[in-house]
Every structure is written in C-alpha cells, then in structure tokens.
Length: 242
Image: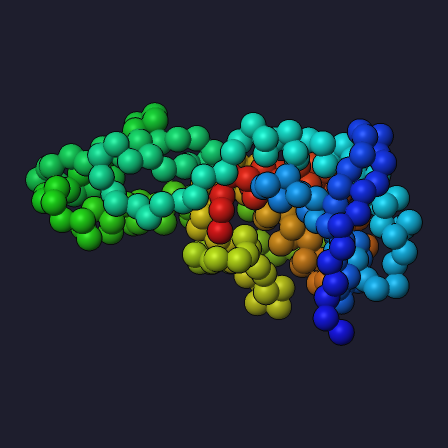
C-alpha cells in the first residue's frame, strides 16, 4: 500500500494549526516541524485522526517554539567551500571567518571568530582544504568525545560501557549506533550546530543502548534524559542542512 499524504487543520491552544498527515508503516505517531515551518506528522494506519490531533495539541508549545525559531533563522543553501580568506563557516552555532596566511610552517588555528590556515603556497586549493579538514577532524573528535562523556554520566544507572566514537560525513543521518560493538557514529557536520544539539543526538544514540527500537519506552527514556530534545532537534535541523 502506497503512503498517503493529506492536509488537515486542528485547533490547538495556540490557534489553528495546519499539518500534513502521512500514513506510514511506523509504530508511533511522529511529529516534525520542517525548516519551512510545515508541520509534518506520520502515523500508523490504525490510528484515528482524533488521536493524531490530540497528540498534536499536546505538542503545541514545541510547535510554536520551533516555528518561531525557524522564522527568525531563515535557511540558506550551503555553497561548496573554496577555503579562501573571508569565507565563513559554522562552528558550534557561531560564524567563524577563514583567513589564509602564507607561512613556512603549515598548520591551522582558531582565534576567537577567526580561523587561520597557515600554508606555504596560498594558491594551492587542495592543500588549504586538507589542512582545514585535518583541523576539523580533531575538533570534531575533541568536542564529540567531551559531549559523550557528559551524556555517559547520565546513563550510569544502566552500567553502559563508554562506546567507541566513529566519525562520518552523512547526508541523511545525524548519528547511528551499534550496541553490540559498543560504537556510536556521529556526522561530522554536527560540529556546525550548537553544543546542545550535539548532546541531543548523542543522548538519542545512548538511549538505543537501552532500547533498540523507537518504541514508547525509548521515547520515555529520551524525554527523561533530555527533556528539551524536540527543541534541540528543531534547532539542529534549522542550523545544518544535510
């Protein structure tokens, strides 16, 4: 059976709310506010519209906050980097400007809102890119490991071993985990988002070490460990476009 999409409107405590409903082979009702402020809901075939709209009403505060955030942070399409002076990158939610410096030694360092790439040949684009990516890899590993340690402490009651961190550049996922191998894989592009967004993704993956699927027990644990996860997820999806 093909998935069906329908447009509906429900009256919430914040007023009338339009939403797109898609029937899918999922276990639970899922709600997402997209960067264009569209409210998208997926639900199993057996759930009534009344149940769905009751769920939407219970999330009206989250919907309002997410829409307000998206409206004040308009999306811009990410252009391909050229690794030149004056180019800006996002690092933990803030803008950092690149400055290419010709030097005898080659290295990359950050000083406040500036990122200096020292390179022997300023015209060597591939070398500029390599130096930048080497630096970014170190930053990702340092920041993500720190966040993982902070989140791991919240899960001490489950006696979970500290997992191995792997980094990947992914186009459709923020992270994944392999509980049996004790591995968490995080998208390098998470480094562009505020720290609390990274914490939300890491907490999500740690919850999978306790509950493998996305059932109600999983979301109950996620809610307990990170009550603002919906807001952080919305901020992440607004800040970084995969």
